[in-house]
Image (cartoon, rainbow, N blue to C red):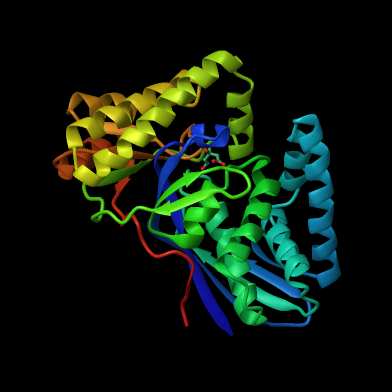
Length: 338
Ligand code: MEV
Protein backbone atom coordinates (compact mmCIF):
# COMPACT_ATOMS: atom_id res chain seq x y z
CA UNK A 1 0.00 0.00 0.00
CA UNK A 2 1.24 3.51 -0.77
CA UNK A 3 0.04 6.93 0.26
CA UNK A 4 0.79 10.33 -1.29
CA UNK A 5 -0.60 13.83 -0.97
CA UNK A 6 -0.76 17.06 -2.98
CA UNK A 7 -1.61 20.55 -1.72
CA UNK A 8 -4.33 22.90 -2.91
CA UNK A 9 -3.38 26.24 -4.44
CA UNK A 10 -4.31 29.88 -4.28
CA UNK A 11 -3.72 32.63 -6.83
CA UNK A 12 -1.99 35.56 -5.16
CA UNK A 13 -2.65 37.27 -8.48
CA UNK A 14 -3.35 36.38 -12.11
CA UNK A 15 -6.38 34.07 -12.26
CA UNK A 16 -8.30 34.34 -15.53
CA UNK A 17 -5.57 36.57 -17.04
CA UNK A 18 -3.31 33.47 -17.03
CA UNK A 19 -5.70 31.80 -19.51
CA UNK A 20 -4.77 34.55 -22.01
CA UNK A 21 -1.02 34.07 -21.65
CA UNK A 22 -0.32 36.54 -18.82
CA UNK A 23 1.82 35.43 -15.88
CA UNK A 24 0.36 34.50 -12.49
CA UNK A 25 1.79 34.10 -8.99
CA UNK A 26 0.32 31.04 -7.29
CA UNK A 27 0.97 29.58 -3.83
CA UNK A 28 0.55 25.97 -2.74
CA UNK A 29 -1.67 26.04 0.38
CA UNK A 30 -1.52 24.02 3.57
CA UNK A 31 -4.69 22.04 2.85
CA UNK A 32 -4.03 18.74 1.09
CA UNK A 33 -5.59 15.90 -0.84
CA UNK A 34 -4.41 12.45 0.39
CA UNK A 35 -4.61 9.41 -1.87
CA UNK A 36 -3.91 5.88 -0.63
CA UNK A 37 -3.62 3.14 -3.26
CA UNK A 38 -3.20 -0.62 -3.17
CA UNK A 39 -3.30 -3.50 -5.67
CA UNK A 40 -6.82 -4.89 -6.31
CA UNK A 41 -8.71 -6.96 -8.95
CA UNK A 42 -10.85 -4.20 -10.43
CA UNK A 43 -10.57 -0.47 -9.80
CA UNK A 44 -12.24 0.47 -6.54
CA UNK A 45 -12.62 4.21 -5.83
CA UNK A 46 -13.56 5.43 -2.37
CA UNK A 47 -13.97 9.02 -1.28
CA UNK A 48 -15.68 10.71 1.66
CA UNK A 49 -17.50 13.06 -0.74
CA UNK A 50 -18.83 10.63 -3.35
CA UNK A 51 -18.85 7.21 -1.68
CA UNK A 52 -17.46 3.92 -3.04
CA UNK A 53 -17.82 2.14 -6.38
CA UNK A 54 -15.98 -0.43 -8.50
CA UNK A 55 -15.14 -0.22 -12.20
CA UNK A 56 -13.36 -2.48 -14.65
CA UNK A 57 -9.90 -1.39 -15.83
CA UNK A 58 -11.09 -1.43 -19.44
CA UNK A 59 -14.10 0.77 -18.66
CA UNK A 60 -11.91 3.50 -17.16
CA UNK A 61 -9.36 3.43 -19.96
CA UNK A 62 -12.10 3.68 -22.61
CA UNK A 63 -13.79 6.48 -20.66
CA UNK A 64 -10.57 8.54 -20.70
CA UNK A 65 -10.22 7.98 -24.47
CA UNK A 66 -13.84 9.05 -25.02
CA UNK A 67 -13.14 12.21 -23.03
CA UNK A 68 -10.09 12.94 -25.16
CA UNK A 69 -12.18 12.62 -28.36
CA UNK A 70 -14.93 14.78 -26.92
CA UNK A 71 -12.36 17.38 -25.81
CA UNK A 72 -10.90 17.52 -29.34
CA UNK A 73 -14.38 17.95 -30.86
CA UNK A 74 -15.27 20.70 -28.37
CA UNK A 75 -11.94 22.43 -28.87
CA UNK A 76 -12.56 22.68 -32.60
CA UNK A 77 -15.93 24.32 -32.00
CA UNK A 78 -14.60 26.35 -29.05
CA UNK A 79 -17.60 25.18 -27.05
CA UNK A 80 -17.00 22.81 -24.17
CA UNK A 81 -20.59 22.54 -22.90
CA UNK A 82 -21.09 18.98 -24.30
CA UNK A 83 -17.96 17.85 -22.42
CA UNK A 84 -19.10 19.56 -19.22
CA UNK A 85 -22.56 17.97 -19.37
CA UNK A 86 -20.97 14.55 -19.90
CA UNK A 87 -18.78 14.99 -16.83
CA UNK A 88 -21.64 16.31 -14.70
CA UNK A 89 -23.69 13.13 -15.32
CA UNK A 90 -21.98 11.17 -12.54
CA UNK A 91 -20.14 12.36 -9.43
CA UNK A 92 -17.44 9.69 -10.03
CA UNK A 93 -16.58 11.00 -13.50
CA UNK A 94 -13.81 13.39 -12.43
CA UNK A 95 -11.93 10.64 -10.59
CA UNK A 96 -12.65 8.10 -13.34
CA UNK A 97 -11.15 10.55 -15.85
CA UNK A 98 -7.85 10.95 -14.03
CA UNK A 99 -7.50 7.24 -13.18
CA UNK A 100 -8.31 6.22 -16.79
CA UNK A 101 -5.94 8.85 -18.18
CA UNK A 102 -3.13 7.76 -15.84
CA UNK A 103 -3.68 4.07 -16.72
CA UNK A 104 -3.54 4.84 -20.46
CA UNK A 105 -0.41 6.99 -20.20
CA UNK A 106 1.38 4.60 -17.83
CA UNK A 107 0.26 1.45 -19.69
CA UNK A 108 -1.30 -0.05 -16.55
CA UNK A 109 -3.37 -3.23 -16.96
CA UNK A 110 -3.68 -4.21 -13.30
CA UNK A 111 -6.40 -3.08 -10.90
CA UNK A 112 -6.09 -0.95 -7.79
CA UNK A 113 -8.08 0.41 -4.89
CA UNK A 114 -7.91 4.16 -4.41
CA UNK A 115 -8.96 5.97 -1.27
CA UNK A 116 -9.25 9.76 -1.39
CA UNK A 117 -9.33 12.03 1.66
CA UNK A 118 -9.17 15.74 1.00
CA UNK A 119 -9.02 18.76 3.35
CA UNK A 120 -9.59 21.12 0.43
CA UNK A 121 -13.12 22.51 0.13
CA UNK A 122 -14.52 21.43 -3.27
CA UNK A 123 -15.03 24.10 -5.91
CA UNK A 124 -13.77 26.86 -3.65
CA UNK A 125 -10.95 28.26 -5.78
CA UNK A 126 -8.38 26.32 -3.76
CA UNK A 127 -7.54 23.74 -6.42
CA UNK A 128 -9.43 20.71 -5.10
CA UNK A 129 -9.66 19.11 -8.57
CA UNK A 130 -6.01 19.80 -9.43
CA UNK A 131 -4.77 18.42 -6.13
CA UNK A 132 -6.90 15.31 -6.67
CA UNK A 133 -5.54 14.83 -10.20
CA UNK A 134 -1.90 15.31 -9.11
CA UNK A 135 -2.22 13.08 -6.03
CA UNK A 136 -4.03 10.30 -7.96
CA UNK A 137 -1.50 10.29 -10.82
CA UNK A 138 1.31 10.41 -8.24
CA UNK A 139 -0.20 7.51 -6.28
CA UNK A 140 -0.53 5.26 -9.35
CA UNK A 141 3.04 6.12 -10.35
CA UNK A 142 4.24 4.94 -6.94
CA UNK A 143 1.97 1.88 -6.74
CA UNK A 144 3.09 0.50 -10.12
CA UNK A 145 6.67 1.77 -9.71
CA UNK A 146 6.54 3.60 -13.05
CA UNK A 147 9.31 6.10 -12.19
CA UNK A 148 7.58 8.96 -14.00
CA UNK A 149 9.17 12.38 -13.65
CA UNK A 150 7.28 15.13 -11.86
CA UNK A 151 6.73 16.76 -15.24
CA UNK A 152 5.09 13.60 -16.61
CA UNK A 153 2.82 13.36 -13.57
CA UNK A 154 1.93 17.03 -14.02
CA UNK A 155 1.07 16.37 -17.68
CA UNK A 156 -1.40 13.62 -16.71
CA UNK A 157 -3.00 15.96 -14.17
CA UNK A 158 -3.22 18.67 -16.85
CA UNK A 159 -5.09 16.33 -19.20
CA UNK A 160 -7.58 15.53 -16.42
CA UNK A 161 -7.97 19.26 -15.82
CA UNK A 162 -8.71 19.75 -19.52
CA UNK A 163 -11.54 17.23 -19.28
CA UNK A 164 -12.93 18.97 -16.21
CA UNK A 165 -12.46 22.61 -17.27
CA UNK A 166 -12.00 22.76 -21.06
CA UNK A 167 -9.04 25.10 -21.54
CA UNK A 168 -7.28 25.42 -18.18
CA UNK A 169 -4.01 27.34 -18.12
CA UNK A 170 -2.15 24.56 -16.29
CA UNK A 171 -1.24 26.92 -13.43
CA UNK A 172 -3.40 25.06 -10.90
CA UNK A 173 -2.02 21.54 -11.45
CA UNK A 174 1.54 22.85 -11.79
CA UNK A 175 1.41 24.55 -8.38
CA UNK A 176 -0.21 21.51 -6.73
CA UNK A 177 2.46 19.29 -8.27
CA UNK A 178 5.62 21.36 -7.61
CA UNK A 179 4.47 23.27 -4.50
CA UNK A 180 5.98 26.49 -3.15
CA UNK A 181 5.28 29.94 -4.53
CA UNK A 182 5.23 29.71 -8.31
CA UNK A 183 5.55 32.21 -11.16
CA UNK A 184 3.55 30.53 -13.94
CA UNK A 185 3.02 31.56 -17.55
CA UNK A 186 1.45 29.52 -20.33
CA UNK A 187 3.88 29.35 -23.23
CA UNK A 188 4.90 27.27 -26.25
CA UNK A 189 6.64 24.86 -26.49
CA UNK A 190 6.85 24.80 -22.69
CA UNK A 191 5.13 26.69 -19.88
CA UNK A 192 7.32 29.04 -17.83
CA UNK A 193 7.51 27.78 -14.25
CA UNK A 194 9.78 29.69 -11.85
CA UNK A 195 9.90 28.99 -8.10
CA UNK A 196 9.87 32.27 -6.14
CA UNK A 197 11.98 31.58 -3.08
CA UNK A 198 10.76 34.48 -0.96
CA UNK A 199 10.27 34.64 2.80
CA UNK A 200 7.10 32.92 3.95
CA UNK A 201 4.01 34.99 3.12
CA UNK A 202 2.39 36.21 6.34
CA UNK A 203 -0.77 38.04 7.35
CA UNK A 204 -3.19 36.49 4.86
CA UNK A 205 -6.59 35.25 6.01
CA UNK A 206 -9.04 33.31 3.85
CA UNK A 207 -12.79 33.86 3.98
CA UNK A 208 -15.03 31.06 2.80
CA UNK A 209 -18.28 32.27 1.22
CA UNK A 210 -20.13 29.43 -0.50
CA UNK A 211 -19.72 26.85 -3.27
CA UNK A 212 -19.86 28.66 -6.63
CA UNK A 213 -23.01 28.01 -8.64
CA UNK A 214 -20.95 27.80 -11.84
CA UNK A 215 -18.00 25.52 -12.64
CA UNK A 216 -14.49 26.74 -13.48
CA UNK A 217 -15.09 25.85 -17.13
CA UNK A 218 -18.31 27.86 -17.23
CA UNK A 219 -16.66 30.88 -15.59
CA UNK A 220 -13.71 30.80 -17.98
CA UNK A 221 -16.26 30.69 -20.81
CA UNK A 222 -18.15 33.64 -19.30
CA UNK A 223 -14.99 35.77 -19.50
CA UNK A 224 -14.23 34.49 -23.00
CA UNK A 225 -17.66 35.68 -24.18
CA UNK A 226 -16.76 39.24 -23.14
CA UNK A 227 -15.96 41.90 -25.74
CA UNK A 228 -12.44 40.98 -26.87
CA UNK A 229 -10.87 44.46 -26.89
CA UNK A 230 -12.20 45.36 -23.49
CA UNK A 231 -11.19 41.96 -22.09
CA UNK A 232 -7.65 42.29 -23.44
CA UNK A 233 -7.27 45.76 -21.92
CA UNK A 234 -8.27 44.57 -18.46
CA UNK A 235 -6.25 41.34 -18.66
CA UNK A 236 -3.19 43.38 -19.69
CA UNK A 237 -3.64 45.47 -16.58
CA UNK A 238 -3.72 42.32 -14.40
CA UNK A 239 -0.64 41.04 -16.27
CA UNK A 240 1.25 44.28 -15.53
CA UNK A 241 0.23 44.19 -11.88
CA UNK A 242 1.47 40.58 -11.65
CA UNK A 243 4.91 41.71 -12.83
CA UNK A 244 4.84 44.48 -10.22
CA UNK A 245 3.66 42.03 -7.56
CA UNK A 246 6.77 39.90 -8.05
CA UNK A 247 8.91 42.75 -6.69
CA UNK A 248 6.30 43.89 -4.19
CA UNK A 249 6.19 40.46 -2.50
CA UNK A 250 9.96 40.17 -2.49
CA UNK A 251 10.37 43.62 -0.92
CA UNK A 252 7.35 43.25 1.39
CA UNK A 253 5.91 46.52 0.10
CA UNK A 254 2.57 45.97 1.82
CA UNK A 255 1.01 49.31 0.88
CA UNK A 256 1.50 48.58 -2.80
CA UNK A 257 0.46 44.94 -2.31
CA UNK A 258 -2.87 45.98 -0.83
CA UNK A 259 -3.55 48.37 -3.70
CA UNK A 260 -2.78 45.66 -6.28
CA UNK A 261 -4.96 43.06 -4.56
CA UNK A 262 -7.92 45.45 -4.39
CA UNK A 263 -7.53 46.58 -7.99
CA UNK A 264 -7.38 42.94 -9.12
CA UNK A 265 -10.66 42.27 -7.34
CA UNK A 266 -12.21 45.32 -9.05
CA UNK A 267 -11.20 44.00 -12.46
CA UNK A 268 -12.45 40.45 -11.75
CA UNK A 269 -15.72 42.00 -10.55
CA UNK A 270 -16.01 44.02 -13.77
CA UNK A 271 -16.27 40.71 -15.68
CA UNK A 272 -19.31 39.68 -13.62
CA UNK A 273 -17.28 37.24 -11.52
CA UNK A 274 -18.36 38.47 -8.08
CA UNK A 275 -21.46 37.59 -6.06
CA UNK A 276 -23.24 39.43 -3.24
CA UNK A 277 -21.24 37.61 -0.57
CA UNK A 278 -17.82 38.39 -2.06
CA UNK A 279 -18.82 42.05 -2.61
CA UNK A 280 -19.87 42.28 1.03
CA UNK A 281 -16.53 40.94 2.29
CA UNK A 282 -14.55 43.12 -0.11
CA UNK A 283 -16.35 46.31 0.96
CA UNK A 284 -16.04 45.54 4.69
CA UNK A 285 -12.32 44.72 4.40
CA UNK A 286 -11.68 47.93 2.47
CA UNK A 287 -13.42 49.87 5.23
CA UNK A 288 -10.81 48.63 7.73
CA UNK A 289 -8.05 49.59 5.26
CA UNK A 290 -7.28 46.00 4.28
CA UNK A 291 -7.32 44.23 0.94
CA UNK A 292 -9.33 41.34 -0.46
CA UNK A 293 -9.72 39.49 -3.71
CA UNK A 294 -11.65 36.54 -5.06
CA UNK A 295 -9.61 33.45 -5.92
CA UNK A 296 -9.41 30.96 -8.78
CA UNK A 297 -12.44 30.92 -11.05
CA UNK A 298 -14.20 33.31 -8.55
CA UNK A 299 -18.04 33.57 -8.16
CA UNK A 300 -17.93 32.60 -4.48
CA UNK A 301 -15.56 30.03 -2.98
CA UNK A 302 -12.79 31.59 -0.91
CA UNK A 303 -11.48 35.15 -0.79
CA UNK A 304 -7.88 36.00 0.04
CA UNK A 305 -7.59 38.94 2.43
CA UNK A 306 -4.65 40.82 3.92
CA UNK A 307 -4.15 43.37 6.69
CA UNK A 308 -1.18 44.47 8.84
CA UNK A 309 -3.23 43.15 11.78
CA UNK A 310 -4.74 39.83 10.61
CA UNK A 311 -6.93 39.64 13.73
CA UNK A 312 -8.93 42.56 12.29
CA UNK A 313 -9.65 40.43 9.21
CA UNK A 314 -10.80 37.50 11.34
CA UNK A 315 -13.04 39.77 13.36
CA UNK A 316 -14.56 41.39 10.23
CA UNK A 317 -15.14 38.10 8.36
CA UNK A 318 -16.70 36.57 11.50
CA UNK A 319 -18.94 39.58 12.04
CA UNK A 320 -20.29 39.23 8.50
CA UNK A 321 -21.20 35.59 9.25
CA UNK A 322 -18.53 33.91 7.07
CA UNK A 323 -15.81 31.45 8.03
CA UNK A 324 -12.28 32.87 8.32
CA UNK A 325 -9.29 30.51 8.26
CA UNK A 326 -5.54 30.75 8.08
CA UNK A 327 -3.28 28.26 6.38
CA UNK A 328 0.36 28.19 5.30
CA UNK A 329 1.23 29.49 1.85
CA UNK A 330 4.09 28.07 -0.24
CA UNK A 331 3.98 24.51 1.15
CA UNK A 332 5.54 21.35 -0.30
CA UNK A 333 4.05 19.91 -3.52
CA UNK A 334 3.34 16.24 -4.31
CA UNK A 335 4.94 14.05 -1.64
CA UNK A 336 4.95 10.51 -0.33
CA UNK A 337 3.21 10.08 2.99
CA UNK A 338 4.61 6.66 3.83
C1 MEV B 1 -8.80 28.61 -11.81
O1 MEV B 1 -8.26 28.16 -10.58
C2 MEV B 1 -7.91 29.63 -12.43
C3 MEV B 1 -8.38 30.16 -13.79
O2 MEV B 1 -7.42 31.13 -14.19
C4 MEV B 1 -8.48 29.06 -14.83
C5 MEV B 1 -7.13 28.48 -15.22
O3 MEV B 1 -6.10 29.12 -15.03
O4 MEV B 1 -7.16 27.38 -15.74
C6 MEV B 1 -9.73 30.85 -13.69
